[in-house]
Each structure stands twice: as structure tokens, then as C-alpha cells.
Image (cartoon, rainbow, N blue to C red; front, side, top):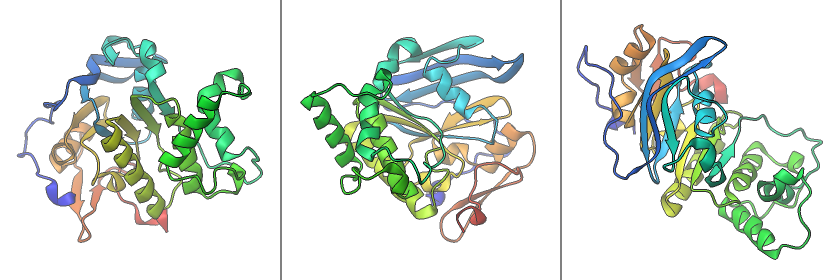
Length: 287
């Protein structure tokens, strides 16, 4: 995928939103967010089409998770406007599946995977599923099959590997059959093979079901073969567009206000150099 990248000309402005192939299901217009009197990002314009797979990238603390909170209706804008599925974000929450950032389950956690997935339907009842409801059981089984977790879904979640746990968490987010899926750092605790497998699974769900997916990530490389668009959050701004327009030395240097180099390795991966926590491939993360 790195071979797709085409740098913009020196001194050119960072790419804007750019055209999308379908009507937008997520929109920000001149949006800004402030927390504790500090502006997290501002002047953000974002349009994401139906069925697009979008990576949300940027350094730690730049406001990536804040973007998800705005689109979930959990955090108000201080300026501008936001809409999801043509309405206010809070009004659309019933059509959004959400997987928040979390660490792996402790080995002593005894809840079964199938019961965890069921919480995606009955979680508002404090974890006590309604008795009966064969339709609910069918939807849980369907979601588990969808992520390829049927073989271990009835085992305690604490006994499963990180990749198996993450598949069941994705099933929990899918069980209510949302139109949009938000995932906050779902790859962070996984080794590279599991990152690749989970990303391929999400891509297949996106394409086969026409589901819009926003995935916050630290390492861009597992996502590059799959994503349609990148929203890069840094320096109080959000720049978005196709990966080959956004992940360039010129664009990232403009965002960080310092020289950033985007290098292409011999195995086709990208390395972002010049900012300590910029999304990049770090070989020691998956040793």
C-alpha cells in the first residue's frame, strides 16, 4: 500500500476533505472542541460516506478519542456543527456500535464470551439478560459466527487469547446490527499477526455489509491495505482524505509544525520519523 502514496508538492497546503463517493453519514463543519479551557482541535471539516473504512490517526493526547466522543453525542462542540446519519449525534446513538479502548481481560475473568456478546443487547439491564428471547439468542449466535468466534465463545473470556477476546468484543458491538461502528484502539494490545487478522475481519464486515467504520489506531501499517480514508489529528487540527494524500512528509510536517519524514520500507510499510509518538511502525512494539 505504501506504493500508492504520492507526495504533495513542497509548500502545498494539507489536503482538505476531498470528494466522497457516497452521501455523507458523518459530518463535521468548522467544528471545535474545548476541555478545561483548552482547545483540543478546531476548524475541523469532515465528511465520511456510507460504507467507508476510516482510520483515525495521530499522536497520544491529540484528540482522537475526543472525536469519537463528539460523534457519539457524549461531548458537545464549542463551535461548528456535527451530524451523524443526518441528525444530531446523540439521536443516532442507537445505530452506532462502539468498542471503547480497553486492556485485555484478567485471566481470572469468568464471564463467558457468549454472555459478553449478549451484553450488547441487554447491557442496559445491568448485565441480566431477559429470559427466553430466542431472537436475541439468534442475534448473539449470528454476531459470534460473523467474527469467527464460535469455537471458543462459551469459554470464560479470561482464558482466551488477546485476539480471541477482541473478536468477541467486536461481536458485542455488532450484535445490535448498527449502521456505523466506532472502535477506539482495538489493535493496541495485539501482536502483529492478530492486528492484521482483526483489521482484515473489519474490512470484510465493512465491504460485505456496507457498514461505516471509524477505527482509532496508533500504528498505521496494519490498516493501510484496507482503509478508504484517513483522519489525522495533530496540532489542534484534523486533516482527512485518502491515505496517499494525508500520510506524506509535507502534510504531516504542516500538521506538526516541524519536519516529519514518511519513509517507505523495502517490505512495503510506512515509517513516520521526527515525532516521538506519531503513528508509525515501531519494530519493538511487536517483538
